Image 1 (tube, rainbow, N blue to C red):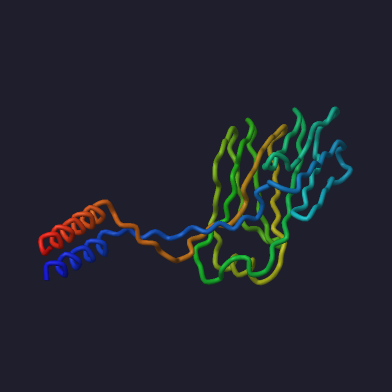
Image 2: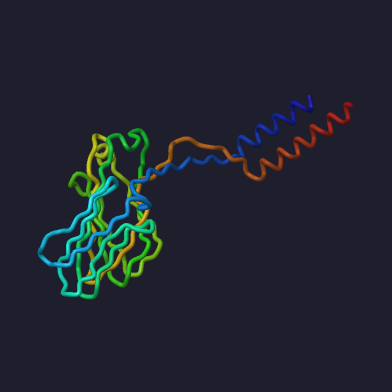
Length: 221
């Protein structure tokens, strides 16, 4: 009888004192750890310069500037790094092909996120599109370092992304002479499953209960 009472008390303590946590899921679009690229545009008005590999298409178009030109967009050392010389302005785009059904249709909300590794003293703008339809726009303040930026997808945007394969496009521009480094672009959501983790109080009651059971067993012996 005493043993049953102790176990009942322990079960109640764990039930009411446990904390439930959803499991986060991250779907990477590009961590820039593979398929390095280098694109430089040195002439204003000659159109964009482009490089395509299995992972992405990277383009750089010089909008203004005079020689010697230093405008470069490259993927190396695990980041997308863009630099412009003093007096130069360029527009850089990155495009990825997304497969159909990439995101779970039954989970909501889902966030799109990326990391700004570093920006210089110039303000920059980032615009995201899916199949040419706008997803979100951001203005990155000067001297931003190691900042995660995120936005939630609407139900219509989620349906649009999942309906079939499509193109995700990132367009980047900024004030004259702008530099920017970006990393870790992807989606994040909770899978809806919860894991119960007992609080310290419940664990203390569990230890006390086990000790009581041991004492009760010893007394019976």
